[in-house]
Image (cartoon, rainbow over all chains, first blue to last red; front, side, top):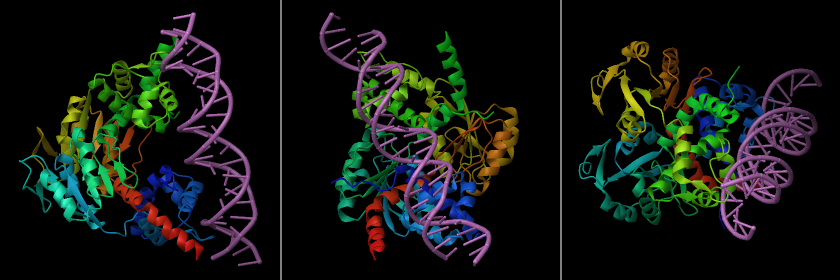
Length: 221
Length: 221
DNA sequence: TAGATTGTTAATCGATTAACAATC
DNA sequence: TAGATTGTTAATCGATTAACAATC
């Protein structure tokens, strides 16, 4: 039976945002906060915040609000940030290397164990302390090591077949940077970073007003 | 009066996805497609596809479906991909450089005109044919050149103030990679690529089942 | 013309907001 | 205790799906 998430995507997408704001508040020395205040800060309604948080339990206290450090901790746990993850990067191009060099992830428990690429020019190169291995070694690595998360940053044309190999090798989650909608079996988590989609949305937004002026004008005539 | 988008965010987020799939179909030599078939391919209902497309006009034909190349072209126009954009990159760290090196954008009309960074180690470095300039030159550059889009890839702590300077300098759109929710005036478009949020969502999803088993167990007791 | 498939209106479903009783 | 603010139920709003008449 397919596992059906109990929490809507809309809520899940807001969780990291809560975490970010709470971390900032904690750093700023704020001890308690009401849903009202947090809502003003984040541009959400107080009601929505209380609903969101209550998907996971009652972490507040009537008459008081939420304890910032505690709520941050709880949401961190909900996000799975209290675990350690073994991460590999498949595809050591611009994006793969940028992810590897991003120091923050290591600190948060996402430790990069290995990197792979097809290009002979990249094989053997040291990226942030990890040597790039040839792609042929990927299958063997998966057989010999536990890998929780794979960063998939290969060209679009190879993304699906590489993902299949990762899944067969026991990878539980794929952070997908290839501009492709992967089809994966139940139980394997994915999240996409579609850079070009994001840029296209930006260019849509900057032109929307003008676009509808044109469309409306055409409809009249 | 604030400009209110006529198209919901849910629809806008699907537009680049349509564009991607139609481009693939065109490349594969598919001439026409029905909303039914496209829906199966994209995991959407036929009804939703027709509703989405009709936000912008009737691009199909009864009894026939949609002409792939034509619809792709129309959606490209809707996304503003028929324009040329002047882009600058502010912050030449890992992400800024990865974006600069990504060849696809240049081809799509997003031409990188300049790059800026505070770090003396980066100033003067050639990134994909563009020399990194010191951050002090940013204000002058904005005064002297038309800039459509700024890629904002500076540390979180400097993101808002840098964005303010960009807006003052006439930038119409910000592609924000800093893990911050910027506050910007009406009329300036933003789109965020929050990498760490995305990774946190992934880690949530891979742990959700287990999380609720724990939460449910705790509730019983 | 008959068949297919859109464009569009109506029905349903889910997410957000409002309201308020519970309780710290 | 009185005041504040949550947790939670009910009302509203918007997005998705279904249905079907229009039309190629």
